[in-house]
Amino acid sequence: MEKKFADGWAKGIIIRNEIDKYLISGKDFIDEVDILDRLEKNKNPDQSFIRHILDKSLSIQTLAPDETAALLNVTSPELWEEIFSAALEVKKKVYDNRIVFFAPLYCSNLCINNCAYCGFREANSREVRRILTLEEIRRETSSVLNEGHKRLVLVFGEHQRSDVEYMAAAVKAVYSVEETAPVSGHPASIRRVNINAAPMEIAKLKILKEAGIGTYQVFQETYHHETYRSVHPSNTIKGDYLWRLYALHRAMEAGLDDVAIGALFGLYDWRFEVMGLLYHALDLEKQFGIGPHTISFPRMTPASGSTLSSDSPWHVSDDDFKKLVAVLRLSVPTAGMIVTAREKAEIKREVIKLGCTQTDASTRIGIGAYSDQKTEQNTDTEQFTIGDPRDLDDVIREVGRMGYIASFCTAGYRCGRTGETIMGMLSHCVEGKYCKLNAVLTFREYLSDYASAETREIGEPLIIKEIGEIESMDYFRDKPHLLQKFRSDYGEILRGKRDLYL
Ligand code: SAM
Ligand code: SF4
Image (cartoon, rainbow, N blue to C red; front, top):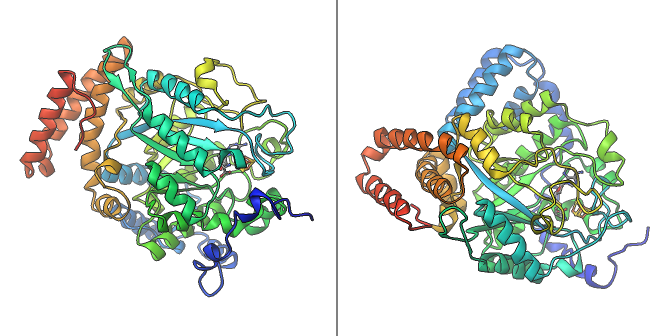
């Protein structure tokens, strides 16, 4: 088959020795025979073994492959209920009861790849192509800021026109925007920009680090080699499984130590993919001493011109989706877990109760769709269909009713709590304490600056309850300086100061 990237811009993208250096004895870390063996030999797991695994996870340790395989093989509904409640307990221990909100910003749908499940793939002639100018990116940012967001993830197809220089310029454009909050008139800007983009060489990743990005996300889509080959044509860059598999190893080496792994559920057996994600986390821990900052588990939804996206034999049911979220939560207890607007509101609700830590809201995935103010979906400019287009305010009110506090905290990365530092704090359940303080401070800002009257009605008592909890926690009683700073910051925010964090 003709290699499309044999010359021109695409030729220099894949750098073989930036793959080979991470292989161990010439092999990648996805040993399929090993995964299948473990899934097989852990069938019908003993109830006492499962309880031992739940205890291990509750002591905030990453599970071993046999342990995750055993969880995946549980059949008893009662034992699944125990797994579900342990998953939520782990989340509470590590991250407390806050949900971090973000919005995706799609910058370009130009793409030279041909992923069988994606509306952006080059062969999809129905897709109307568009790449935002920096001015348009600033306009999109203003719209998202006016909703109340503070965290963005920028999303790009893989294309010469959206290369790393464009990405870095886009990041800077986003950070440059200042808006005034609609309710209070206080200044507002985006405080953390994450990136979801194709794998890159180390030198380019350093440019992204320099531009000030937070997390770098690359989803492996499927860890199963043969399935990977069948959905990513070999004459495309994305067809190189290993280039993608080690994208985040390269990011670590470039100094981007908040990396995000993910799999596109629905391409292959969900149990295998959960094992793949665990092996990925373990290899990052082994080679860099730090696991993934977050794990994403998007479920494939129908995309324009893609039959696979609607009729895959591996489609994951809602029940199995809940199971995979809980098993991931328990398997890598320190990782943030992201559920996106691909899911319908009712499923989002369910999996938030299983330990998710982040979600998006007021999501528009069309290119330029935030400033166009279009609420209906246009499948000819979008990558796939979304299940939950609700506004940020509605989702915050809903999670508030469920007892969760919305957070826009970006303190970790701005205070140097990233990579090894944050992982240590997460595993000792210390980061969650800071999360709680910063969640309250950023929620205070949201309630004063953006919330509707109905959301304030839910939010004000919730925030008082949270402050009460903080005041009575032993952890803070032993650290009066922290509590004092928190009280003073909270007061300052009420008096009109913004962007205070611990
Ligand atoms: N082009 C970059 C890449 O492939 O890495 C950027 C990411 S792409 C725009 C973002 C993610 O969307 C993909 O990694 C994939 O997991 C997910 N995605 C693609 N098609 C999808 C579909 N039909 N349903 C749900 N998610 C999809
Ligand atoms: Fe392009 Fe990414 Fe879509 Fe594949 S998933 S076609 S690489 S935008």
